[in-house]
Length: 381
Image 1: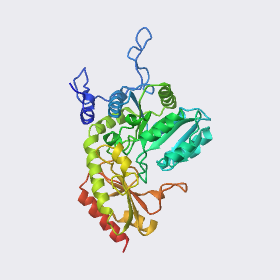
Image 2: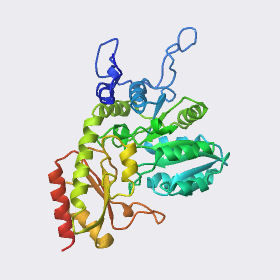
Image 3: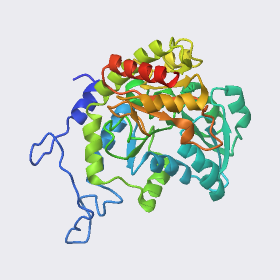
Image 4: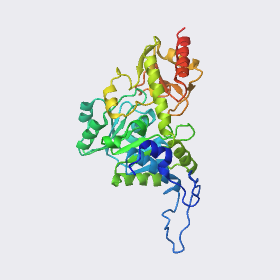
């Protein structure tokens, strides 16, 4: 049989069934520990759930297959997954991260990571020359990229950055939370690691917190990350792993519907007189459009931001007047969320005060647009 398409891999979760019961949906293995054999061995391969939980096997295998990587690991959160990559480095190592990125990780890098001993530089990842000047050959161990980058949705040329990173002896890790395996596979573009906040699109139902890493090769760096997960204890629970697998099975129809809605909204909102800018990689006028068109397949994601005329006051008032959109942090669920992002981030944030971040869900696009347009009108009266 020919190689299965990613849609089939996700929907059937690789087609695994329980060999004992023939169940299509997997059991939830809640046990924290496993019995030794009579001769004191662990021939099952498992001894304690913090090191190796059978609930992880199927979702990790599905993620590795979708990203075309050699292995995957689940974590207790996206932050646990991301920080494990940095904690697997040694104090004194140099890392490069983007200026525009998920605020919590940026804050962690600027505080905890530097206090712990990493040397961290933040650079505009869309400026390849600036990245090249920041690299320290033989000293830079990791380049971290986020694309599309929260909350301005900058598009980073993964292939070009991979060449720069590898040329200096560094590895490249890509936060592909927003792109998802539906629209982008960074490992095929030269990345060494892919990170997902699985809380978001991979699960898609706003009912669990999880993270995931996928590696191109199971090398020494991957094994160090595995040690960080095992010894640090940043693991996912069995029920959460089961929920994540359930969410993965509907990944493609959910994300494609949400992205189609986002494109519809972006095109319509670009003409709204109460909005100064629409930030969405699927608009031809967006600075990263050409790169997104080349490295994202089939869509541009379901995240966009709008900059509201009238500064922060008008933006906050707009969010106050919506009825269908939910005023909440996070993204990637089936329901649409709106957030005044500058209120969440700190003084070091590059987020404009007039910006509203929109996580577009799978509701009717016309309903979403009408609700937002009404709120914009009310906010500008």
